[in-house]
Image 1 (cartoon, helix red, strand yellow):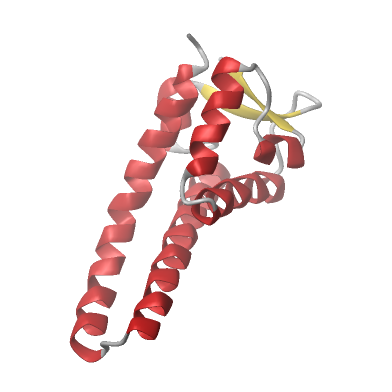
Image 2 (cartoon, rainbow, N blue to C red; image 1 turned 120 degrees about the vertical axis):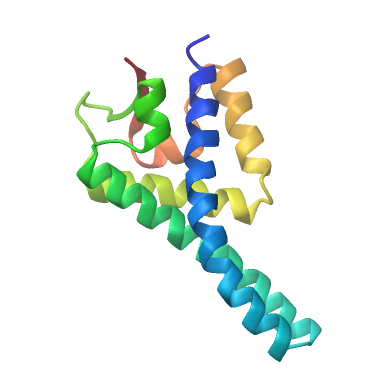
Length: 140
């Protein structure tokens, strides 16, 4: 049952990121809507919004990991990301882990998210972004 807390942390943290993202994206939306109208430009706008979302998520994760020790979802549900040595990850390694997670999520059109749930919940294995950063989740 502990493993389901991981999904909760992802939902809470993405709700916080989405809140800040929406505030920023509204200003760009009005400008783009009233000035640009072309299918090629629309594709670039879509890519811009994806990059903007990842940038907001990375900023949120950096500030919360650096100054509050954990993002809000992980604090509420007491889920900790540790290195294979059992120590807290360095800020650089944690940011690499989070970037890889968001990058793979958007690259695979959210299929990576469901694949990670399948691996962690049903197969008891680490997800790809955890393997690449030598990290694991501790429920404390």
